[in-house]
Length: 346
Image 1 (tube, one colour):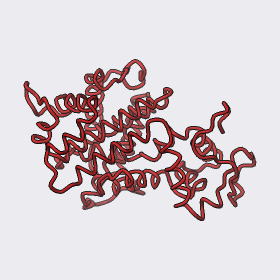
Image 2: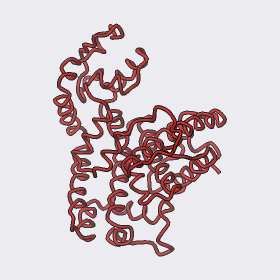
Image 3: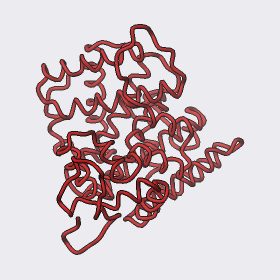
Image 4: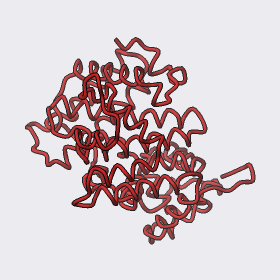
């Protein structure tokens, strides 16, 4: 709970978990029985609370406005550019992004306007680039401590890994994989930013009761953080492929044969895989141990996304170098994430 006199977010006061694993500490109990029976009501309450936090309302409204225009069937490049140009800083960074090594398709001259970028890249790719940049920017601005800064960087990095994974398989529109990976943990990440105390309560409860974070989250609120993210994505008007990909589950076991995946299944599989690869790169500092864990992950995804350890390590090196080389306009302080940038990456 908040101890400095200020109240933020929703309260987890009394939790009625009918289980021997239920904590006895009253401060960790929540109005669980009501949330479990009426998850829609609880989710609506979370939305309302979140919409009152900091710059979330303007961020939310901006994405909604962009998506309204981008979802118009006959919207012109100029119409969409006009919406994006309402945020001058976003436009400048978007132009720098499409001219950077992340894309590298425009030659020496580069592009000088959003409208020009849309004509060359297409509306879908500019939408995805703008939305991913907005998400990263918002998370950076809202980062109050090192953990949140790392979450923001991991969100960007997971997207870049997904883009590389898609390109390695020559799958069309690799930027759609980038945006799906960045939004894959939207609910979990927004909890970290807007409800840190409540999130910590759930994490500690999960650790003591030896259960996953998602299971503990559902016990407290009646829905998963994944479902929270999907709900917010729907409110923002994000494309259906993104929302559906967010619901992908980790494989239970490797497949003995190649699994034929739909486009949405491809998006979800690569988004989840890239987030786990990113977690491993941040959390495991010993390279031999990290390679062993990555090897097990590669085995688990056999048949769904076939790759080898060398490919993943080369991919990670390229992504880290890209982030480092473009850190200035992304406002990334590489000194604040030594776990990622101190290890030789080339």
